Image (tube, rainbow, N blue to C red; front, side, top):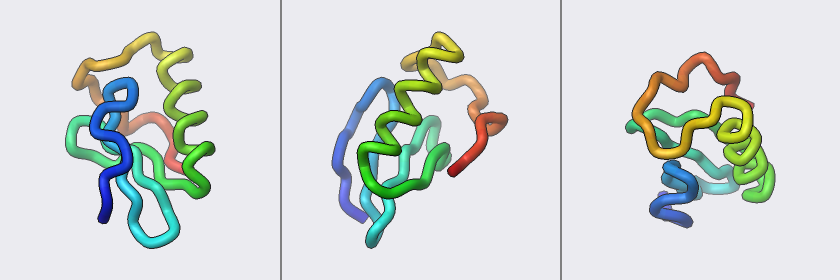
Length: 64
């Protein structure tokens, strides 16, 4: 697994084979490909919830 972003809006982005994982509070929140979809999902999530660097429980947000 290769780290792409250490801190993108509070998420760590890793690449694992052909998918990208967005990790927040040590949990995978989004798993998608291509990278642009993961970043768009994070941006949308931040806009909807209004959080950025908190360690709130994000497990209610759907994984794609």
